[in-house]
Structure formats: structure tokens, C-alpha cells
Length: 245
Image 1 (cartoon, rainbow, N blue to C red):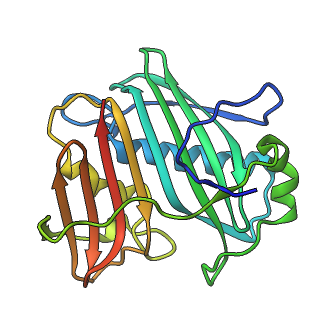
Image 2: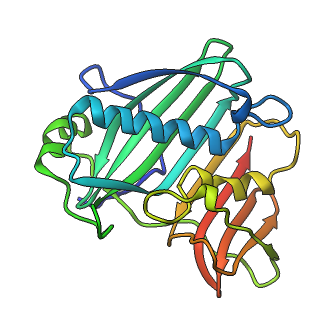
């Protein structure tokens, strides 16, 4: 049976699915000037609930996880001071990766449906490793045998796309010494139309680490969707797309 493209569809849990919930409040540092939750802040919440779920499940700390691809579907944007609940569960697996789906709902109507492919890597080397037996035992039943791939699907930029210098901040680096996956969403945020309604579908793919000190450029194309990339010496580091409803 062929594998589904990871983080490309949104799957609801079954009654028997193992899920984990946390609550958060949307704060000043999470919103844009219009008071709507930004994409990078959303990704940070996804990172937090995934980490808290792993702790709750008692996963062996011998492994680390990096994000390969994320899909965020904003059906109703969260807003400043809104209390939200995040519910997360596993919806697919591959050799060294798993698909985690998360639903964010708020007391003021927020509804954000998300999916990410996380790759299990070894501490110290950052190299992908086969999913541990412990992980498969805990999360496997929820997947129901569903297989996903970690392949990237977004296209590259055209030769006529607009290019500009992109500054990589030390403040955005994580323990792997590259830009954290949540902080990396900042370049797509920079490309969005200020004040526009935040209802639509956002995608982010991580092809290679974004490091400090390199000559990184942001590439931008504005058509029906907003497409953006981070590149270095013609090599794509990250690809992103925002498709408004």
C-alpha cells in the first residue's frame, strides 16, 4: 500500500484515538497588529503541545524530533486574550517519522486544524532513526495502519520571483543551532498582506537547516496564493505557501 503525503490532509480522531489536551491563552506576543494569532505563534503552540504530549506519554528522552512539513488550516482565527484548547493525536507513521494532527479551538470561536510530519533523530548527530518500539506501541493504535511519507510537495520559485536579503537572528536558533521550526514561520508572516483576514491554508516545508551567518535570501511570488522561500546559493532551505479562503 502506497504512503499518503504527510501533513497534506486533516484527519479527525476516532473515539478510540489516544489524544492529549492542553490549554493556552493568546497573548500580546502571539498576535499581529489586528489582534489575530500569527502563524509563527500557532506553530509554537503546536511545538509545545507535542512536547507536553511526549512527556505525558513517558517517551524515552534518547531521541529528538524535527519538523519536516506543517499544514495549518485557519477556519476562524484566534484573537488576543482568547482561551484556546489544543488537542493532539497521531494520524500516521513512516520509517523514521510520524504525522501529528492538532485541533485548536477557542472560547471566542477560534478553529484551527493542523498537521505536521515530525522526524525522529538521534541526540548528538541529528540523523533520522527508525521509530522506537516505545513510540509505535503508544501511538501506533491511533494510526490504524495509516502510512505517510515525509516527501516535500511545494514547488520551487520561478526565475522572475522577487528576491531580498533575509536576516537570520541568533534569538531564533534552537539547540540544534539552526532556526527553530516555529520561528521559521516569520518569513511567511513577512510576506502576508498586513491586516488581511487570517482565514485560509498555510503550508511550510523544511528542506534544509537555516543557519546563522549565511547569505540567506527570501524569495516571494504573489498570485492567487502567497508563495515564499528561503534560499542560500540557489539551494532551497524552506518553502511556504498561504492560500486565503
